[in-house]
Amino acid sequence: MRLRSTRRLLAAPDEMWALLSEPYHLADWWPGYTAVRPDRRGLAVGARWTVTRSDRPGLLRTPRGEGTLVITQVAPPAALGWRDVQQALDVAVTVRPVDGESEAAVELTAAAWRVPLEGLRGMPERALARLHALWQTAERLR
Image 1 (tube, rainbow, N blue to C red):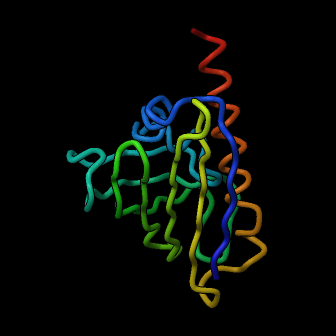
Image 2: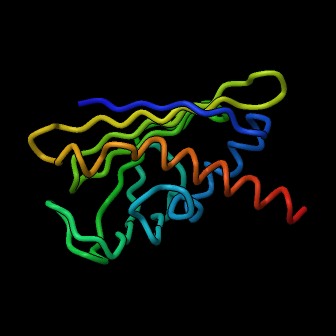
Image 3: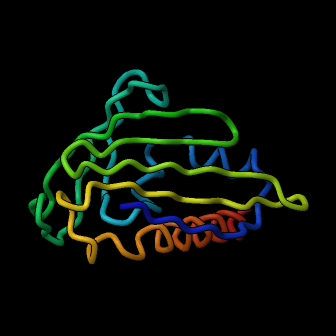
């Protein structure tokens, strides 16, 4: 199963990459994560990050449980990817320039038999909406 969404963001790709590439910001914009602890490699292919999940239980997770992400793609300022090991989810975030701003796309791929579709539907849209809101907040603080 593959879900994809795109959204225009009011930031240049390099500015958006600065936000995406900071491991601790992932919990600010990815639905379901409340904290991230990157390993010593930080943002690098093969790095393993520990995430704390939200209070909402799911089929393959307990509330406030921990999980592991493996970073699968790092291509500044255009692409970031990871695999959520316990949930068997692959996530790819791409950013491309559009008239001095960015268009971001989030693609989520999951084995349908492992994760209920209703728990994932809308997740790419929610992630992009949160990323947009986070950027707007950062801009207002400048």
